[in-house]
Image 1 (cartoon, rainbow, N blue to C red):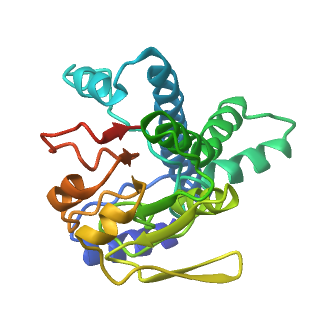
Image 2 (image 1 turned 180 degrees about the vertical axis):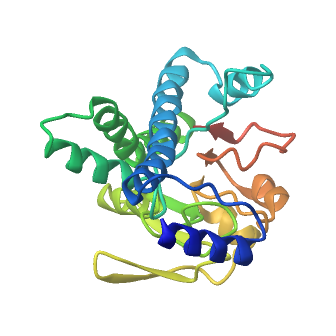
Length: 251
């Protein structure tokens, strides 16, 4: 109790905000894991619906925008190429592991994990389909420009970023892949350093057979990219403001 009081006072002073106190460290830890598991599962739901909506010819992004007009009972989550960061992809698995000590299986966590872990592979399948249907071109040998390796917008953190897996799978399929991220010049993945482009221009964009957005950084020149790209696969709805959408496909 004394420790809780001291720690709470410190955080109140540092943050300038109130602190919610719970009865034990175990409750505090479980609360944090609940937050991240809640997000993990809901992202898994919209990722699965994104795959279904693509087959049905429906934009899930439009569906979510419509659903969030409801004043209660719905919180908007959006699909993407997978989960990134040091919390949402990992915390639910700590809980899943701990649950097994008690002979308990967290089926929802396992199900959402299967969906979210598959998203990088699904994105590459969609990229391959775009090249095939639009240009009758195979992914093997195609020039692909990936925009964004950070796990979310406008940060330089690529921990657990699904973009790294997307790039890995593209390369395994024989694509000639380059990446540009204004926040990250290089990244280390599976012991290897991967260097990005210093910048992109009209020629670099137009030379690519396909441009893939895996992060929607605010400092991209979206108008230039749209005007010069042969085709854009947008996994983050980064091009939501583009008027001409003839060369854009959404996840």
